[in-house]
Image (cartoon, rainbow, N blue to C red; front, side, top):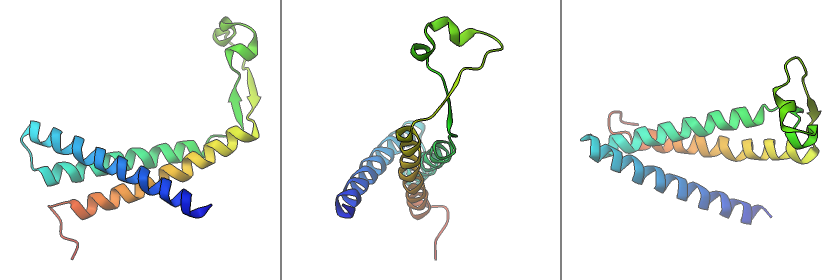
Length: 124
């Protein structure tokens, strides 16, 4: 069970990092900047975005807003003064935690790739 999960995570990491590097290099060339610096900034930005997404997905509470189809009509969402809330299902809570568990390591690895590919600062 752990090996297939690691394989999927590695595939996701490769796809995101190659896509980020390609898009960052293209934007850097269009703007006339250094390709290595553009790739580093792209890794930083996408990594930070994934860290923020993982943080917010992991902090979803057990209460969710009631959906329009649960409330009966679409206009119940716009009623002032009435808060229609429901408890999140077990699957929704597990999905939030699992999504956070994927986003956070991806963000950390992309930031590390940005640090390693940054041409302005030497690691050693």
